[in-house]
Length: 412
Image 1 (tube, helix red, strand yellow):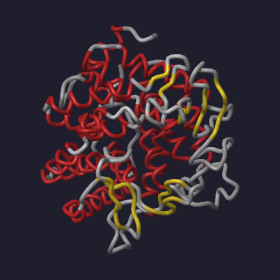
Image 2 (cartoon, helix red, strand yellow):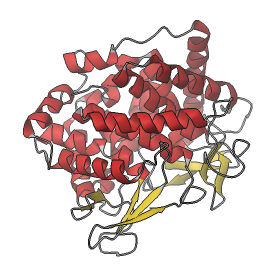
Image 3 (tube, one colour):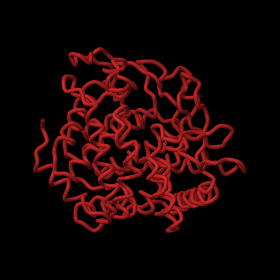
Image 4 (spheres, helix red, strand yellow):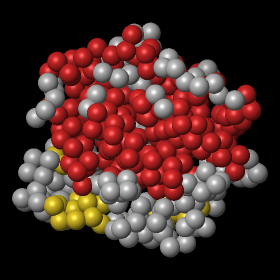
């Protein structure tokens, strides 16, 4: 494996101390030079964040589980969190950072605690989505070691899904189920930071080594020459031999599912920050450049950039929110202000055209999201990760030091 103990410990030095926003590595990331944000943009983003806090004040007391999506504008819940359970406490943490209202802090901790059984779940690759915005953030903001310990246990569960023959983390299915045993999806790039966190906290490079090996595999098989990506890539699980691209949530194996593209660009940028591997940064830029070039003038991504009806197709605002966060990260990593400018246009577009302001019954903050278009599952609804990443993106602009405290924006 390619990551040294020295690298692991160097990373740990920047991320192991809760509330360490004044340490040199973290401060350097959070204070990286950025071009001035136009005053009208700041007003719009602040208004959107204020609206989100107002909405969450009204809705949070009525929430009875983990929101997974809306039906007739009302949240539908999972009691165990499904794959999205981390986003509700994560959204509450973002609301707390913006409002300083301790009611959000209390609810975030209570919601995160309900995920405790999932620390031992070896049947999903989504443990990063479940535990980073909930338990890792809780540890970083409170210093309570219970959260750190649980997040590391979740990382232990995640690395059991690593296939050493193919150098990948399998996406779906129980470990003893041969179906999908060789299936890799672009989304997994966003779960790898949990492994980087575990290496930071334990000094054990195994976690980060696995994350790096998976990233190298994804870098080899997902990006096409133009920078677009498929949703799925299949391997022979017994030998690790590549089979080829596929899809579940995209239009077809040759298309480019917009939310997957956003997961990829954000995930590769994060892995660059954790390793300083320039190839990971180059891949993030390729994915970003394709996505930026595929945007329609309204700056709300269509659900698939290569579906036949694009650019006049169904939208996915969640892809826009994720993409904006990734581009803000990428702008800091590369020093290129153009990525930040596109991110600001994305966030402004979501604030202007995708909020639920005109509905008196909506539970969510962001509308116009699409979960799984090919299955006609959740078309033009609200999704919990859209609310989370919208707030993360806005606070990256308005309150970067606070976001750094919550999710660690440092670079090795």
